[in-house]
Length: 136
Image (cartoon, rainbow, N blue to C red):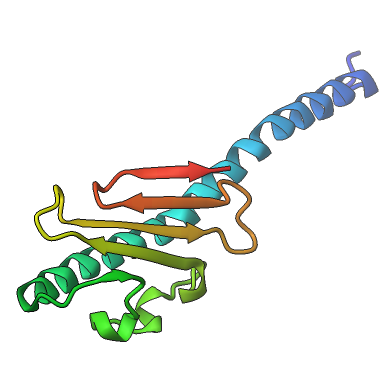
């Protein structure tokens, strides 16, 4: 008669296959989780970019736009506007420069630093051309 059970070798092979699959899948999933978290930071940076553009247009008409980092309150935002589940106001820095007659007249860079819990990339920067660059 035949026994209806698995041998130790068969069980060992199954455990080994499952372990190999887990070893492959876990790093892939970690990268996907970080990418999903970064989508929040990127969205907030794009909102900030739109606010900087509107602020520059308003100030351009008055001829008083300069360079540096205008405060959120000057631009009509608050720290809560740059606070989500993973990214907070402190993860964002920006620098702007408006040159009358320049091409383009408004130049800015928004740097977003990864909060604790996100391993890669460490920073991402959005420029006035809506191009992202990453630093690992």
